[in-house]
Length: 120
Image (tube, rainbow, N blue to C red):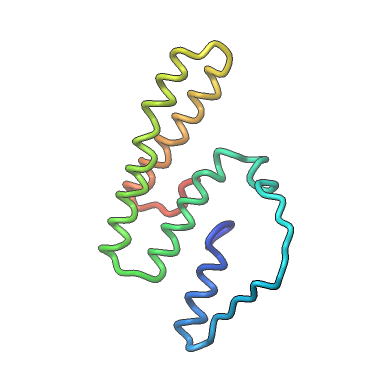
């Protein structure tokens, strides 16, 4: 199941399917310290976010929609790989980090093309 990301979308979708009313209150205030969970495992969470979206689509939509989503997520990742490889070639300080990012995107693309919603 979804470890992180898209769980509130899943809840709202299922509530709506069950006939419940979804409410929004603009008066509520939450202070969110963004990135506190994902900062510790940045690259795994980058994959997890897209994987959670794929899991949501697989769970609630038809196979064709899911297959198209997998293809689009793979394309999202693949389009970023050349940038990070070129950056690694010309980088003086972050070469290994740039290669790690390119490898992460390649991993995500490969797993998305295989239909694996657990990209991380």
